[in-house]
Image 1 (cartoon, rainbow, N blue to C red):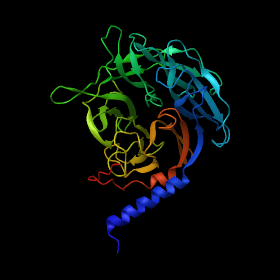
Image 2: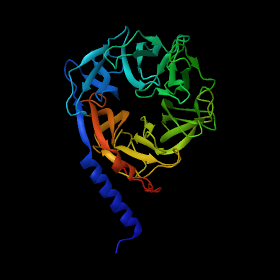
Image 3: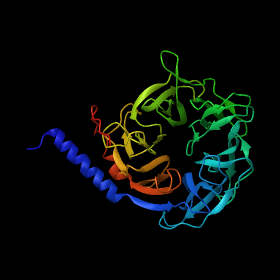
Image 4: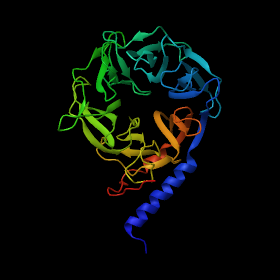
Amino acid sequence: MYSVMQLIFLFVWLQGAFLLQAQKTLLTIEPTESYPRNSEGDLIELEDGRLVLVYTRFTGGSSDHAAADLAMRSSDDGGKTWSDDKIVVRREGGSNVMSVSLLRLSDRRIALFYLSKRSLEDCRPMLRISTDECRSFGEATLCIPEKQGYYVLNNDRALQLESGRLILPVALHNEPGQEKPDWAGRVMCYFSDDVGKTWRKSLTTLTGRLPNGSRFTIQEPGIVQLNASRLMMYCRTDMGSQYVTYSTDEGDTWSELAPSSLVSPVSPATIERIPKSKQLLCVWNDHSGTHSFPVGKRSPQCISISSDEGKTWARSLVIEADPEGWYCYTAMTFLKGRVLLAYCAGDKKVGGLNRLKVVSLPMELLSDMTGIRAPQSANTKL
């Protein structure tokens, strides 16, 4: 006879096996000699059902500061086939343009956010708006005009709240005249209440500090809207988990940072609300011990659901398991009956950030995850 725990683990194992079988790879963009890195993109569904992917196509090398443009591909058959690249934004000077967020605005226009990286002292988010379903984009607006600095806004991070406010969570790492970059990071938000015409900084700036006053790293923040008009911000850290903070005034002020149950290496998570539901969906590198993991690496890539506004998470399922893989910078797009994920899926052979992958997962199977909690004492490493 099986124990209850054994039956639960058997059910979860079968669920994971079904998920991997149902998972479909829609697109893989490999690095080439001409384009040594393809990474950090976002997806959006157009009004006619076509899919659009905009991502960073590097031409000058594979480092974060190498020359790169924003390239676009489209699909009119649900992701089975894709068009050739079309350049959307060429390098605007300095290093590159990268880290795309595509956002359908409440007025049905499409916003394209990205970083314009000019130097280690000047990297700021830009906004372009399309009124013709991504056929073209308007002139660029600088989203942090009053203060030059090296700000990081991850891909698929821009958010429009129910009130209409646009909000960008950013981490500041350098300013002109600063002795050296502060990679431990200072986290804040910039928001606009006039659809991107003007921007203002949040009153709160967050730094990671231990009780003894020493710094710890907080980087690459993201925001998800909770119920009762609350916001939850999550950040990658070097403390062994994603840290979270909350706002009740649409991002102007934030609570103290605190660790979450999302155990992870120094790697970003992506959390979004499943449309028209009370559930949140998270993709991250689960290092809780629920699955085997290589210490310090961004593997495995896992997915989980929360039914209580991010307080607890169902036992995660693995979508990428290669211990030599490097899975991160995930963009999440919900379609009818499925969710599309676009993420870096490199490895030691091609480079961790150099290969971009788009996969499709069935929402019906993911919804069955609720109620299956992760074991709290597991600790399985490679």
